[in-house]
Length: 172
Image (cartoon, rainbow, N blue to C red; front, top):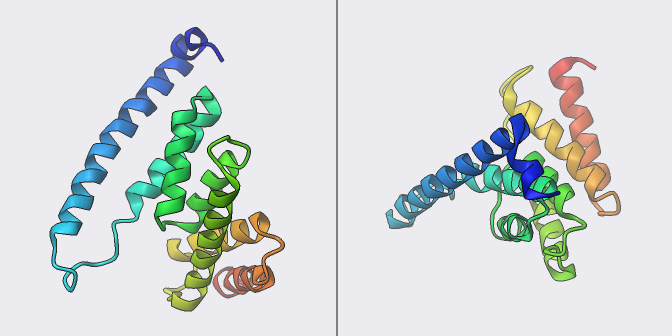
């Protein structure tokens, strides 16, 4: 896609806005990460997870729209280095599977991380009642993980858990 096509009209304006917000989020993420790292380890909570997940999704999107490999490189590295929402993780992964940034070694590591995230959802899940957003995230994440890694030995477990959550939360 030519840069002229990308930067004219409403689509170009939206694309430029997304790029500006991406830069602002990176700046904010770095500040949050630095503040987190400055805390003593016994006082730290889990690593701030929202920003890397959002940035990976945004970078994967920008790669698919612009074809700029720097966005794919960034998103793949975020997938390789950080844990975040399983659903966001799988969405970014799908957008990058055919990218040159997704080497076989990175793919293997990212798929292992995705499987670990799915298992952690099952192990550490807390039910807060019907129709809550955590349940929506779990069902979406588990379904996406099972569809993304259909040959994984725990795929059936993830599907069953998603179905169980649907039945318990929505009565289906």
